[in-house]
Image (cartoon, rainbow, N blue to C red):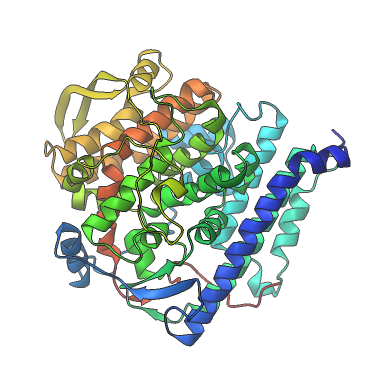
Length: 506
């Protein structure tokens, strides 16, 4: 397993350079954000980032924001609330696979295992090492609080020592170095937030950026998927995909991020601080275009984009199979808006630079391929609130085939798509929908993880799961979730969703 230093440098130097540039750009923008917070104003004359008033419209999205401002949410926020699962299904899964400690929380288990197992990249002991590296992402939440009471500030060093193994293959050394660099970004961000966390937020101000690519690199650093950066394409395409791993989650967090004045909120970065429905629809359309770039014209995952596609689309599964976010409640508030998103062109494709100019002005890709989704009917039979609902729904053929072959349980498709679709079609009530989703989510998550392990997380499982998530995007579900999340856009405190030590950084 010993590494040849010459070969190491030749193979991984470009990725290490990219990693360093992304983190450097991210930390530079954090420095400007800190300066703006201290100054209490918006853009500096030559600055790259500013805090601006939110722009809203007299439209259905604006009406949701107005409900929040009237206090309809009653101060509720579930961001960063991490409940365990007590269902027998989840307990049996933990016992079978030996999940202990933080692995007992669906949030952690789904992120590290559900989103991390890629046998197409590794199919030996190194896969376990990569899954452990992914746990580094979760240090974003507590890197400035761990050991604070004991006056210890060397958490990063201790984590790096934990990951230190002799004679690692060069690619694992590079991946560990990427994660270490990303932790340095989070360390700065969290300590900046700790210093500002007593500052009151209005819920009506957001961070915007002047330069597309510099912002993209900051968002890539803020997304926490550096473990897999080496598996992505090099140069701009790979950086775009790093950014997308965070952007797809930000659609669920628009309202909470306004509430806590989150500087990494990418949807509002793309709308330049607007939640006017037309602007949100434009950003949604382009988000889907960028994810579509992973797919062929005939609706399969491009081989060279496989790792990035499955990483990006594992994030929505993580979001919807646990209660860190309140995504299904948000969806229940605005499910009808999914039809508005469906009226947009959601089958074009393009990289970030195809969709936005350098100053983040929306543009339309020219000469890029479109995705033609091969669909057919899938029968369903699901009981909701004592009433049985049967019928068929048209879905990507790879999903239908995976269900027919027993690779993807029908119950997963029903939870992730059919039941939300029934709400969007007006066939069930929001109350019945939320009751059902809350009641079965632990069981659903256990079945998702068990099905993944049974298929060894191979492409026969990951591709239909990716297609299922894409069907959610193509049907406008995440637009409805994003609009509904605005119920959280109320006054609070900067970074008030997380605990802070306020101790100086190492």
